[in-house]
Image (tube, rainbow, N blue to C red; front, side, top):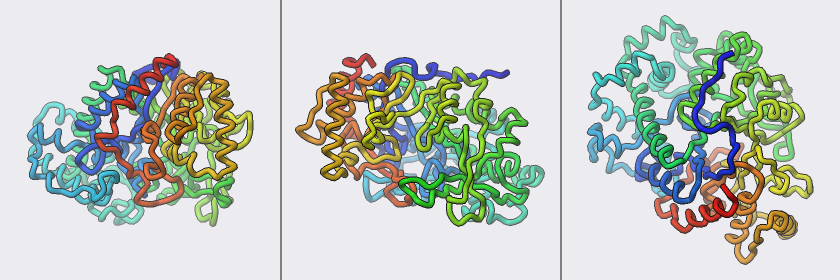
Amino acid sequence: METIQYKGKNKCQKREAGILMPVSSLPSNEGIGTLGKGAYRFVDWLCNANMKIWQVLPLLPTGYGDSPYQSYASDALNYYFIDLETLEEEGLLKKNDYQDIVWSENVRRVDYGKLFEYKAEILKIAFSRFDKTAKDWVSFLAEKRYLDFAVFMSLKTKFSYAPWTDWEKEYKIYDETRIQRYVEEHRADVEFWQFTQYLFLKQWNSLLKYAHERKVFIMGDMPIYVSYDSVEAWKYGKDLFMMDENGNLSMLAGVPPDAFCEDGQFWGNPVYDWDKLKTTNYRWWKDRIRYAFTLYDILRIDHFRAFDRFYAIPSGAETAKEGEWLDGPKTDLFQDMQTCAIVAEDLGIIDDGVRALLKATGYPGMKVFEFAFDGNPENEYLPSLYNENCVAYTGTHDNDTLRSFIEQMDIKQRKDFEERLEEECLDADVAYLTETIEDECKSVIELLFASKANLVIIPMQDTLFLGEEARLNAPATVSNRNWTFRFIETDLKNRTAAWLKELTEEYNR
């Protein structure tokens, strides 16, 4: 049985700490975080803070709602993150090619509309000046790297970015011969989209090398599902998903009713046909994971519970109530990946099947502090109940900031929270500070550092005690506040780094 090779450390077996910082949120002058100087400065800041792990969100091109979890492709790279100043230094751009663009009216917010309007056009200028006889570029093309993504994007632009289901009949159903002919007839355009991936990889690998030299390792993030409007749904269709031969979905992803949504949630993603995937020994999934470990040292897989059982909703259902639980691949998929540095996002509806899958793989799950306060003294998210093989968070990218989480409590909730927090701090021999909300946040973060969890990840917002204005995403909503929050240069404070470093020394991380 083939063993998937990966780089980095074996699971999360050392006591370490890290920061959750999406690339999109990094400081830069280009409307969104990039792989340029702001990223390198952040690595330096992590090093000064003795933070060993930098967790990023998916590096995929953003799709519906500007979400990196709704992408056009399962393994493509977001060309919005390509740093233009670096391209200028390499002679591919001139400053006047991009310096006059107003990327956003608010330095704290990404304006995806401006990026959509300008970024590809600027990169086309760089492509026009690029030496297309360069040996590594010729090899890149010869290996057909990212060719599927490039063809898909070329066709998407041809059809005014309409979903592939609305393309002309000639291209709507994937046909190998027809696509080969399209590539020959539109080679320059297809190669441009490959060029965006080439540039990203060049800049990413340089940043990764810099981080490793400073003993900082990258945790990546893999969405379990792809978008319906994706190259995978278009190309593979019924061979990969529960779809018919015309590309119509028979079942869609979602979640059942819960305390937060009485009708459940329609996500709308295609769900995998695991029976068909099994006949190939899960080749597509294994290739996907193998590829991810060329980019990252550790891989967090989103919605891990779906590998045990997943919720599928029939096409045409009026609400998610009409869905059903179906079996996933369970341990079969992971039999040759026991030593991979994978973190399982095991949040949501967790049952004995999910627990058995985690135990069988040995992958660490996640413990989110903000989920701990439902009045249950045996709530598994209370820091006093953590075991070593887990990753502890104050909150995730889908949660409110820690400060806002506390501030939004009513009087009774706040009193109950503070009583329980004081008990947790006493149990861990951590000082419980109450003079200000910042002090209370500090106590929470120190409590996680003191816990048994081998790895602690703190969202950057929480290290600065930022409020609701800094929330990254509110699930099940679409707004210009989701996925747009950004940091500025002065947020990388030396005193914050010094405080975090003290915590790592105090609690042996």
